[in-house]
Amino acid sequence: MFKSLLRAKWPLFAFVVLIVVSVTALIGPRVAPKDPNRQNIVTRLQPPMQPDRTGKVTAYLGTDGLGRDVLSRLLYGARVSVIVGFSAVFIGGLIGTSLGVTAGYFGGRLDSIIMRLADIQLAFPFILLAIMFLVVLKPGIWNLILILGVGQWVTYARIARAQTISQREKEYVEAAKALGARTLAVVFRTVLPNILAPLIVIASFNVSSVILSEASLSFLGLGVPPTVPTWGGMLAESRDQLLAGRWWLAVFPGVAIALTVLSFNLIGDWLRDFLDPRLRGIQ
Image: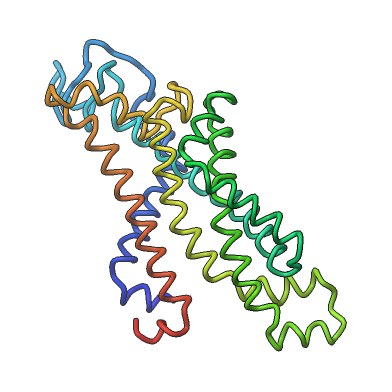
């Protein structure tokens, strides 16, 4: 696996970026130079690397319209993106895989009910549903994780169902049943390990889509409370300043989102090739 990663090159770069983002999310609050919500009108809209009256550089990435340090807010914002991304994908993957395996293995009326629920959810634009529920439940990081997680289950359910249907008639599944294995043992020990590869790939891609969804909802003011620094919230706050030439307010959070999403997509693309035995020898 490590040799394949080295040969692929770009996924190795993506791993480095994700490690930096993850470490930043863990230790960002400790290494942030200032309180991300501390306002200082005297130093508002200060460009990056500009020395203050004493000749010292105190805002390496500049300040926003309220004089808050952009670097500190960027470090704190990484924590929100990482927590929301992984937590929502875990919730969606757990719910979707469980329902998909259940529908595919048992079939019948249970399969029809689960798939019809999936069709109903797909009939509505997800972003509109998320906005509606966030308006009702009020913005908050846990509400956001719950809504984004529940919104991801359909993808996992459909893939898990299709893979389970193709696996349940295989010889090794029939052998496990003939040996007297219980249904749960057959599902968890025989079927589930053989359908995890495509689900892992989908999960890696879904982390990036969840991060984009969180940034979009935060941009609209519906993600998390304004007192919590987020990359999407920083972009929203920079809208009125772009025409005035304050580029740093949008560039730094925008680059952070783009690099993180691109890295997850590169990892997902590499995992798809690595976990497929037919493509593994080509790498």
